[in-house]
Image (cartoon, rainbow, N blue to C red; front, top):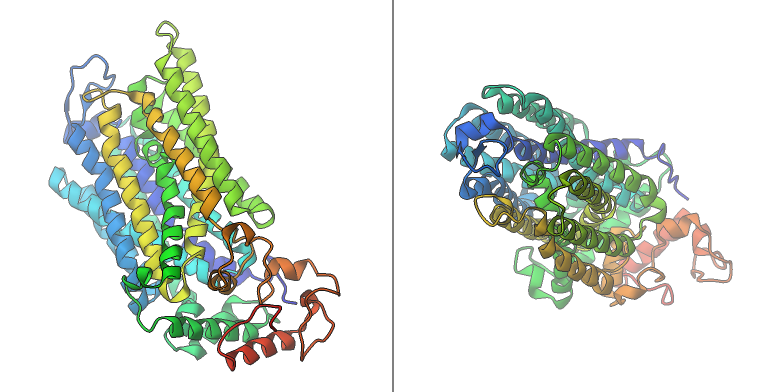
Length: 543
């Protein structure tokens, strides 16, 4: 049995850690831009003087400008995610991340060097495209190289860096907001260069995804990459044979790879809808409203120090995801975490809306404390369950040959939902428009409940399943509610670590009478080799 310890997989985890830095820039962007909209010096350049006594800043952005500054980045991310499918198929995972690094630095330079609103819009769009690349290609790589046991925790770590970036951005804004010139926002933008520079250089030292290389017929390169990623003594040959067999069957199912293939076969159509739905639950939770406009929201609601409150939220968010990373390998049930966290997100936003509606205008301090308190509960639920598990499931469910297309489409639709939230939010919270403030939560409460119902009834449990096992479960037509207890033809890591009774599920022709957990390496290879000559994988009962 292969060593499943963290120490044994240190090189693979190191490669995944590097790709986990990708969303750090994404989080930085959200944290920084959210704070800029509450900086008088930034508002003087891109906004107008606002005599409205309800505006404590004295300056404001028009609703349209506020919409575009936040939503153009999301539109760019949407375009970048949709482009991930064809780009990844032809270029691979690593080259696309290099492109994202270059594009990120170029777009950031535009935003630093301009005072033109048009040029700012261009910079926001381009950095959005790079963010779409970072979020999609980084997660694709991790999904394909990490052992099943650590996949959930690795993608959760991916989200740790999103929240960490948002925290760093908010803290930097808090210190530079006191500057009385354009440096108040130009200095924070300089921080963005660090992430793409580190990733660009370190990518030279890690291998391309072995699953991608197998899909392109580069078997020797795939084997070398797997040897680098896996510890000494791991069952490299059995794993590479399993990947090759899955790729062969995948190719037999569909001779082409393109957008239409996502919906051509009923099963691929189902997998696409589930992946898209899983990722879109993030937008349905209303999180992007809080992420994009948190500081501005607190400022206009008159809830204490807006920058300090945003720092608190970001810090709590990081702690929540770290807790999620720690418990996910052992308790990482996708459906349970997603459903519970969505319900909590909905209830907390409803409470915040009710508290603000029934507020005592003679005691604004108490109202402010309650809003911040329930906002903290919301961010714990979102970061501790929603954000991590939604991306994990969205990346696990697609078929291998269509993974970049399906996950790109899922990320794209997710970003489209985020754009919708970012684009419409100013109409509700800006004093120059509806001025709802925290009452905006009334809209997100039913949205969260609908998303929770979707997860509960349709999303299958994928904990500790390899990507090949997930493919087998779909092909076997196993209902979502029965995934957790279903035995596939290849034992998962969870089964390997918990040996079965000697009377259950033996395999003929190799280790007669042995339980699956104790089957030898040679036996697993025999099963894969035998299936290769009989047209595909079989269930345990057939083997």
